[in-house]
Length: 356
Image 1 (spheres, rainbow, N blue to C red):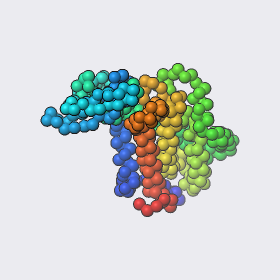
Image 2 (cartoon, one colour; image 1 turned 90 degrees about the horizontal axis):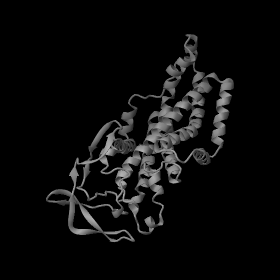
Image 3 (cartoon, rainbow, N blue to C red; image 1 turned 180 degrees about the vertical axis):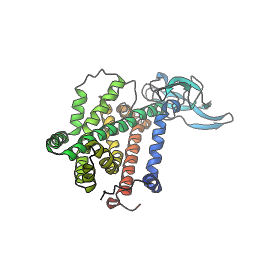
Image 4 (cartoon, one colour; image 1 turned 135 degrees about the horizontal axis):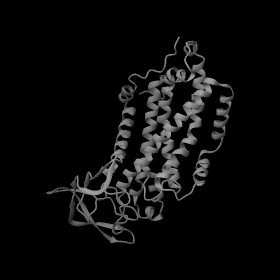
């Protein structure tokens, strides 16, 4: 008798029908949309500087006869970056203006942006940093790094964990012992210290792309062991089922049995594990960049932006807009946890955490 896998038909419909699941999907959909179209949505590039407008506060919006506009400010006290709005001075927001060049999706050369103002005026929806860079633009570009690292990292770690744990549980013997002792060794080492040691062992002069790839590899190296142990236990349980014995009798190869019979029964776990594990990768990148050994300038990531907000002046002068990357990290992690919790309740009702 074939084991009945967790019911996956209509899973997303059930998730959307629950308030928490719908909220999590809406938040994550919005965040990934912003990351995907960051060059178009951002009025400026992540490295565009304006030393005359350092620590500029968020510009307030106003409505004029010419349409939606932003107020213009003057720096009344440069020592404290004290900006005051200039009475009667505004800059009209232009829609789809031509700005700095970029490649949409990394493929199509473009120069159109969603909005902007006539140069040399600037629009700072979330203020500017210590060298006059637009925090809103850098937040969007940083989302591309911080959010994609989670997806790529979890794909690699779950893939390695699935293969290693599945083969260990199916074949057993010496291969099972080698895989399990390796996972136990990795899990016995404190993750943060291993993360810092691995990153610090490499040259600090890597380019942005090389650092990004290195962080993905390190986080995946740390994350596959937990997935492999769980998959191995599930594979051992499924290996004892009669439908696997029937597949062996019919002459199917071990790889086909793993692909056609074990993998569909593990899909529910992999789906939940992915949603609950992605926040760890996002926080790992943020921690590395915050400590100065992650993403480097001129690229942007949420962790790097938080590291640049450590100056005492930021807290003494209440430049709160420089802490918005922390809010972005918090919202993203909370949304993924909500989604994973909802998926677990839908797929395995025996472990519900509360009424939905």
